Length: 292
Image 1 (spheres, rainbow, N blue to C red):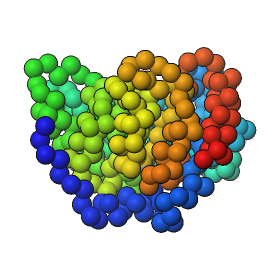
Image 2: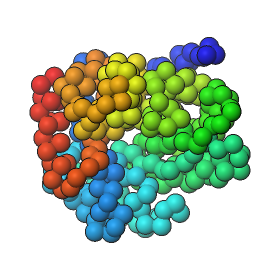
Image 3: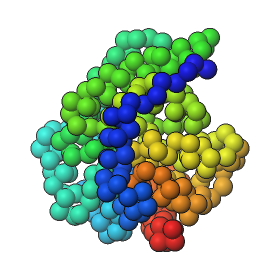
Image 4: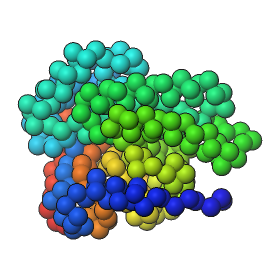
């Protein structure tokens, strides 16, 4: 594996500031529970719920923040009207809900460069949406194409080149770009770290998905990457040697507390009725947070 370039000193300072503005590493009161909208994927996609109702639900359940993924804005992948974006922004503000992040479906592992360029345009459009929403982070993917005879490092070169263009645009618009480890092109902590350090920007980080480190011990993988996290998807199950088991939230939150990360901890449920599962999960998360 090729040598990994070091993060710049300025990047490290900026990263510590945005995640831990107080400068106090143990200031765990800055860890706050949020909700990833994918928890309500089925009702949001079938129209029985919309973003207004999701924000109402978050307020009723005591969430601090919500991640409003782009898929759930009508007309996606086209961007919504400014009128609707500002309506959602105002609604969330009046309900006391921070809009932590948005996200898109992109794929930078295509061999066809024209497809990758189209997804760069998509990401840039939604960076503009994030700016208007007041979301600090946009979540992107590396991609999930079969790389065929290409080496991982070769495809990583494509991915990094495209991400860098998005990150530079995000920097201009005040939005941090975060790649999710999604058990796709990025499967391990080392792969995530290699991408992050190749991009080497204070405006880029990891959207840390606790359910998608599935080789070996996921808690060790999380410990390797936690200081590069700028947002989270905390799922009910974690995978130990590719076998699911219930996540140990106290253990996870202690790892986070010992890191430089401070900010939203977005929960995500994947199965069952979210109206029933999400309230149980937030209760468990709040109790775990109190126990650290």
